[in-house]
Length: 320
Image 1 (spheres, rainbow, N blue to C red):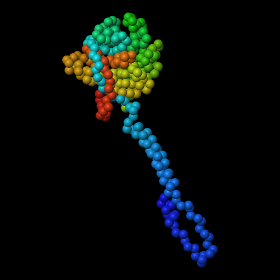
Image 2: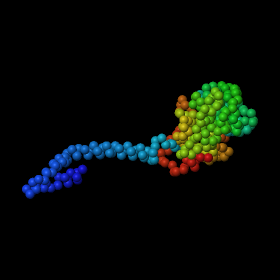
Image 3: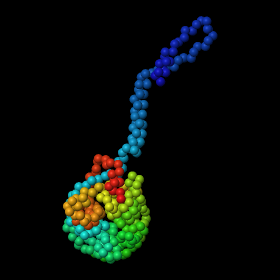
Image 4: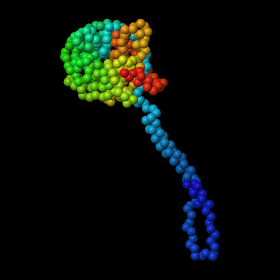
């Protein structure tokens, strides 16, 4: 507006000649431009523009540059080490209070459900399975232990107090790999990318989600544990644990544990198999992990990795 006002002020006022007495007079010019009012408007306009630009840019870049809800990556430190049966092909693991673990082991002819003393690793009670079954995932709901078996849609329910077998059941997953519970329903895995929700009374599937990271399915979901509103899953044949939203299947984070297995191999334990087994002590906020045929069980504490990983690093480490 300022240049236009300047031109208006500079427009000459013609001297009206007496030779043109009948020409009508020109209409009055606009009032002079008020610099004071315009100066007061400038900060207001700049403030409103700044708010708009900031709001727009914040929402725009949050979609493409950084998002607090993006998956977090964690390393760990070992807080404690405990003995673990090196002949236990660990398939399911859970903490049941009072320094007690329940564990399901696999392999034909060697499968079992067992009660284990955490501090010593001593097997206090064992229920051996028929040689035709290969034990898999295990979870505890109330007084009942639920176990699934490999290559079958068959599972068993046991009394936690004496490991007496109470019931054989069938389920609707493609296979039996992992089990966990939030205290209300069961969560199951079958070696695919599907996380199942199962009614503990009917053993029917009541919901399921494909587990995804960066738009890709995360396959080979194995042993499961429910921790603070998330389902944690070992990814078979990797040294990774995926932290999964049970409501959507979205991977919320990754825990990278390769140094545990590498440390055991370096110490001469060359017969160990893969990382498998997660247990959660909710009262004391303690996390335990182990593996198939591992001589040790570890209490770990997580630490977020702040330095960004290279593109494709998680896919390389954790996808199988």
